[in-house]
Image 1 (cartoon, rainbow, N blue to C red):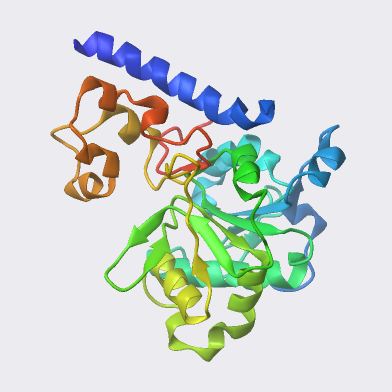
Image 2: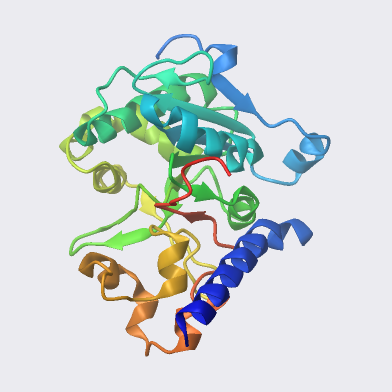
Length: 291
């Protein structure tokens, strides 16, 4: 396959996959919250839509330097499909708006930002949603597919769903891919995390959340569709479409399970062979400017 043909096929595949993911299931600061710090969904069919769907509150971790590009792109695209959307940052920005948590923008503080956001959500929004979806500002979420995935699941069970990573002793969900917590699990974490060292606010954010969930008796849920395909993806669409190259990092090769198959053109340009048709989230998106 020539480079030009491969490029054209890749472009077409990305367009078709994005279209399919979007439409597939459509067709079948602690204290009193500021009313301007939350984005609500406003469309003509919203009331009827909520009657038949689980209520989803989306919360996005961002930072001041990303507001004009990444975070604006999130706000103007998929975030508007959530029932409620909150943006958490180190500083409050009443114009965007963001909720300031007061932590310095350092990677080591991600777990502190996450726990701070969970406490804020519990205090102000725990009864306003069934599920609470966490994402970063470089995550793309297909909210309709999240609704479909969750429609038969119970928000009163202590469970969360996402892109599962496996260690020797336990499993946890990738933070970058986004994960969605039940109302019961969020409540348990906020009320009981101070009772175990497994929930201390140190270390990698996603792994620490997994350790905390396990210690509190929660469940790292199975996040696959009826074909046993993963619906949350820790990596970008690019990795799914192009397959391995000479520059592909070894840690990426290890985690892209479908590359363990024989790498033919059918696998490289695999479409829904490699990803679920109800895929819910992709991470590390390069289109960080509005387009």
